Length: 376
Image 1: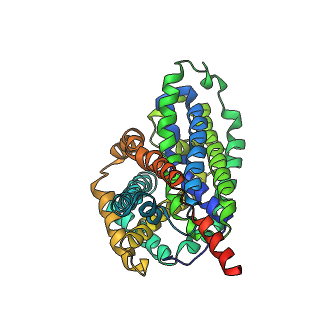
Image 2: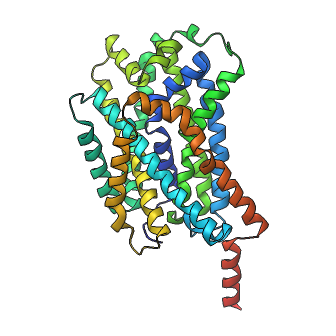
Image 3: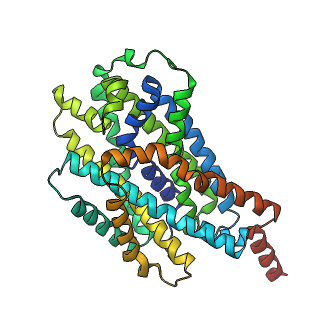
């Protein structure tokens, strides 16, 4: 294990929850409403169930090899050469996803807070801070996130309470007005982004102390994340209406500003922005960490810290070159990315699980036999 740091199953669940909400809380209401209009909230519920299935799939596979990441056990299951190719794909996946999320948060910061700031400075500063945290290992990410998470999520409740009088319940009708097809299209998009992206947490299994409890922690994270995202979509539609929500870049941000227009409280949008930036920091940090650890494992390096800066430079370059503006980022994230990520999220893990079961590969049994022989 390159990073000997350990986190608890609870901290891993908290990381997954923040990972799910990092960026999605701000932009997913627009995507959900553009697909299913007033039924956008239904897309998140269906996507949440898909997220639970993804967690069950990769944890069932990962628990067969509790001391190895998906990069390492892919060679054991599929053979050296095919496994090496699959492992490299799982190095590229977090690298590419980290670039996408960096681009999205760069746009969010420059549009809502720092319109005159050069995008390169925003991306570079964010990645430099994350790189420093990554060098501290997974424990650093886990502990910082555990401290910030309660403040970020408790922020949601007062927002809802302040907006209740502004809810227009007619915005949710007619129920299933355009049938099931738009809802299913929206759920496919949300299932991929953000729920399917939790496949990255297959990389973290070797760093979890009480690994037998991790499946429960991950499922709870998916369910709580789904509830919060569903509420986010519902509130945006109830306050702004489905058509306006679909047209806005950051409907959740605009919903909070609506409180100020109503004369309740001021500067809530600034506080919300700061809290969402911390969630984006965590999501990019998880992607960055998985790309670094994955590359070090794939190259069989003795220390992952030697590739922290090169990987950061690649994420920085891709975030500038591959995603030029907000429109491109959004279109890619919600229309192209679902098809791009499907093999990583479902097809390859399912294939490896089937092959592992057929070949009866289970390192837990080997360890049990080995300890039994020692006692004998």
